Amino acid sequence: MTASAALIRGKLAALLLGADGVGLYGQIDTFYRGLVQICILSTSAGVTRCVAELHGAGDTSGIRRAFWSITAFSVGLAALVAGLVLICSSWISGAVMGDARYGPFLSIVALGLPLQALSDIAMGMLIGLRDLRAQIMITAAYTAGGAALYGGLIVRYGLAGAVYGSLATAACACAASAFFLSRHRILRLRRQAADQFFSPALLRAILAVGLTGGILAITDRVVLLVFRTILIHKFGLAANGLYQVVYSLSQLNIALAFGFVGTYLVPTLSGLQDRQRSQAEFSSALRLTVLVATLGSAVMMLYGRFVILATYSPAFLGAMPLLRYQALGDFFRALNLLLSATIFAVHGWKPWFVMGMSFYAAYILFFRLLLPSAGLSAIAIAYLLSQVVACALAAAFFARFTGMCWLRAAPLLWRSLALLLTAGALVRWGSLAMTYFLGGAALLLWARLALTSSECRRLWLHVSSPAILLAGGHR
Image 1: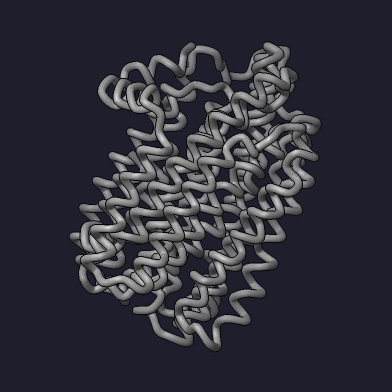
Image 2: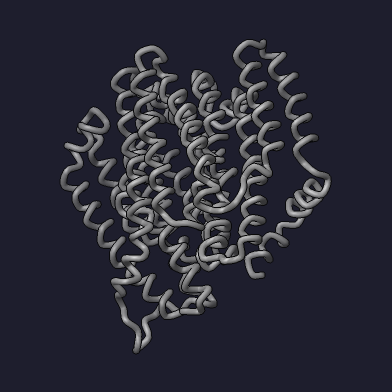
């Protein structure tokens, strides 16, 4: 649902705004996402882990205290940051956008910060409670409502409508989260007479995770914002528009390959004492991640031209050289995120934080070294090389911090790498016809070797009967 809404928004922006407009809006959205990370400090991850542990212990009043404590902190911080942006919007616009005239746009998106903070906290609680049905209902409500409002506003007002659409989406997410959270059968968030409204101990427990995750998320947004600002200054808004296409498709690819880890694997492994079950859960997650990430990256590398035409427009085909490097990097990023998230769930935040920061250090270094020679492609090549480094580091430390083994998936990993290297060679040296034909044959061979017959049957069962998946949320 989220992917469909993102594709609709991207298509409308490409058709109505052009490369320059997409580049400008992409910079505004990157700035907004950076502010979101500053305001929430990745507290949704801390909320997920804290609520999962409290729910396992049957401490309903503790869950209630955790909600009100983190809500007061995050919404207050978001309101403060929004106020600062409103005051300094012209100066910020000059620094980030290269033109102070876009200050009102930054002010508009900043108004969505408190709304986004509340919706992220609500989703983190539902993930910790492992309530799949409520998560799906919230996602359906705000993606449908947000996409409809965004579409109407961008058609009517152009770039300004896209900015208004961001605020409308945040409002839809907040309203849906508040509604479904208030109706949750386990939660009774209204304060009871004997309850303590604010718990410093629970807030510290959440922020211990949230602050480290927040530093990583803020670093990610700041680095991305700085890199894109450099692209705008060196190559213009149109170049940033091309990278926006690559970045958006990359985020979609990662969401499909990794989205279930935060919603299922992390709350399942948090506090789990059964080593055998932990290994089984991780092995299943690793296999699923490799299968989805390989398929997504291979399709982007081999048939990215058709993906861009379907989701954007012919004006963005210049993004193809970047997309191929980014797609290969996404495969390693999915593996890295899975290994790091498992370490976080089993061992704690310290090694997770160190491995995360190692990626950004490598990313900055490679981008700085490659920019003079590779030009616009430097940002995608640096992303690929940095993900390889970070994935190797996570694999090297995984057994030490979790006591589990990831080598059971080695045959599948080798087959997947062989497919992706073949795809890379075809797009680099082969003709279009050869790439499409041999690439399709390689994909079919990989699928035949990678998937078991029972997996194919179960996949078809879930695709043909979505009710089975929904029912799983209440088992």
